[in-house]
Length: 215
Image (cartoon, rainbow, N blue to C red; front, side, top):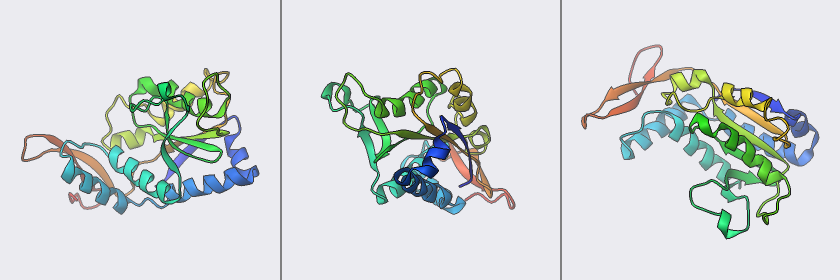
């Protein structure tokens, strides 16, 4: 996949200068760089066969990132705090992924969660009155650009890369941790269209840009 990125508190420089973080960032880059359009089509259709209400690429992207990061021994659904009172199953106090010094959030949820998604890597990096389960030093936030939202069939209410970047400035004093915000660009060979299936439900289908073929 192709993507754009914005660095908060010099995260990009830190990921180059710190040997451990450079290694972890290279792993993340390897995962993102090697997700092809064909991977997305196959994963989306596989999910669609099990979950016929699927309309966007969000589940396919999440699934591919999860599988490939776990293969590199990243921990998924990693709790921030050791206190069981802050270890619920709704994900509020959990990171999507963590390994060593870096926390990752993959954020395709409602725009109202933008601030919280940015704050979670800070919670995992800063000292806290609640006993910590993990101690990181930086964060990576992966989300969809406005272009990807449109081409990937995302709900309009999903917070986009552009919105995350907009929030960095007013939250600067709160976001004390270096964070690299990544905006995923749309597929180059296809787009999502909405079709009505045999159950009279709208579902997302992959339409090839050159031929109009539905895959």
